Image (cartoon, rainbow, N blue to C red; front, side, top):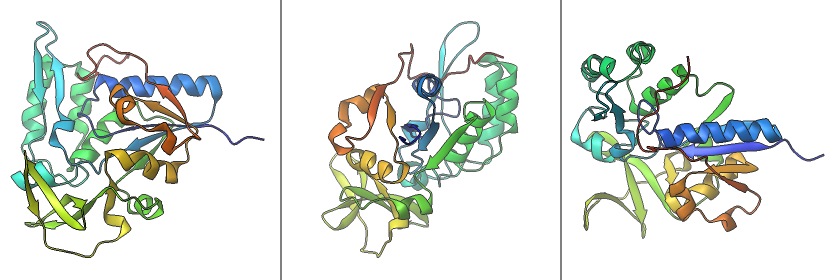
Length: 258
């Protein structure tokens, strides 16, 4: 008898209201589960450090004009270099943002936002997805989880979470050195430091193999961006499924039915 299907999709925290392409991945995974059974696993790549990932674009409920929001991060070092699972939200950001939301989202989502109190960016996003009902019946696997990292296979292309200027930063491992990308061709080379598997997260091109070594999925729902760089040969046992199309894919999804 064959093993039960494991349907997986992956995504960084992508807005405190999820971007529409992430919602489409949820829909695709649930449709596939209805067809073949099995469980759904959301590989939550909260080890990423890019602050642009959490931008949230909403449309005014009357005019349709877009508004781009993002977290106010604790300090510049955290904003640029700290992984999302450790980025702290400024204390006054929550209340200030809540005041803007009634013109852009339904009252129930304003209340859900007010009720979410997580102090770290990745936790806040995940808490909102849960309050919106998106995570019901879905197993969450976080790339920041030390147990996940220790169980994952070794990769040669990776980042390491290390101390820097009083913060934890995500440094790229390049030719034996740890480097922070300041922009353009400028890098900061950090002092050598010992590190273990629980500090390592994969780079883009090694992420699939690293993830699969723990999750062992049978099916993977791939977004448009992923389709451009995923290498199916890295995991020939996976059946890849393109996510369902959705309009305005980079904007936030807030029109869930009551």
